[in-house]
Length: 521
Image 1 (cartoon, rainbow, N blue to C red):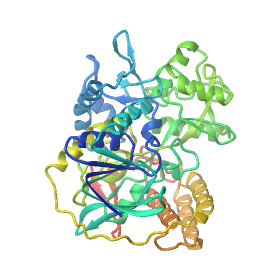
Image 2: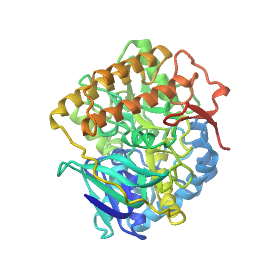
Image 3: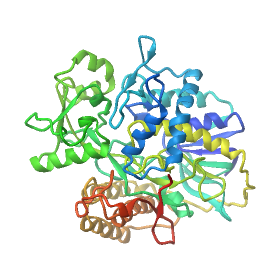
Image 4: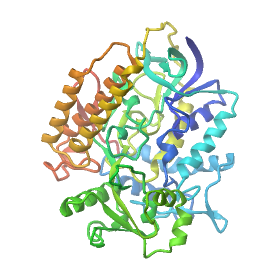
């Protein structure tokens, strides 16, 4: 079955939703999402959107905080675009009807790790991602120019002569293959952090977009930099959820089991240091104490105010037998992919007519470590820029595609879940927050063994998903092996220092040797 649109948006996070909403002014849009439209990292984001809206703050200060957090690997031009265009994109949202939290008639601004000014807008206290995403879902759902296709898994990006014409998908509802053709195709499938056992991401966030783009010849950049959020709720049962660093922004302390603060002396911002610094400090504290977690203590703060500011976190803590106003057990968890598919400042890739936005994109903004709450802003700024760029580059697409006869053997579901869980254990243990050449090579060997022992069937959906999962994990591991230093979210215990010889982006491209390219300043 074939369908044709002016714009194909694959993914339903904030980048995809915003781009679809904006693109609907210029043509017919299809949103394709592998699950329901409200399952995304954006929907679960607690902290907010970092943008300069206060008279005492300036884009130059936001620029500096982003560059500093990025560990020397941020490209200057996209960061300048982010901090200068970001305030207008936020204003556009507000004018469209989005309501952010206010205090005394003014936007309420939070403080998060790495920021020297309060500039993080939030909505519903700690439900910003949900509130903004739901606002955008309401906009696209009521738009006659936008069709939404839930439970449609992208299985191939259609490319001929380096020109993208659309995507092949598996419709889980009707259990059949479909082809969507588009004058412009945008991939916004999110990150990879759910390849790890301990993660803050939805279980669907396993890097499908990375594998799909890699397989058609896109450049994959900086995959070694998987950011582990320092403070994810810890429970012995394994259940976890994000404890926003806005909690530390309101004054919470990190303490060990003896209730002693351990961030003092490690960074000038203490608990509000950039995420890589805090995550590493927590990991080392846990290792020294031989414990599974540390704690966030809030008993010195106004408990009722904390409950009002963080209603969702408070509710989740209560459901898990924890009093948020006292102390919360936390440990790092895989949270955000700082690298991804390399794009220019307009979201364009090295494949004509193919754009990538959101966490899946590597625009050069995040560097080796993402500054808190820059991700939702990136979705808005670069989602719009990508749509604007489409009007200038409208290559003729091929419509010569046929149904390939994909199948889905539902009896392979349990096996796939079992192998996926095994892979997540391997990634967590051997390619996680701290790694070494020995552990990374062991992980690679284990992935090879899984690949060899798996019953891979050509053009079968579960087989394809497994191959993509292994592909993504290998891209992460290979990049981590090549970078023989510790920088930002990449921490190598066998190369613990930063090396000026690695002030470059790593690039992986199918069929080619992995290389490094210069930072753009």
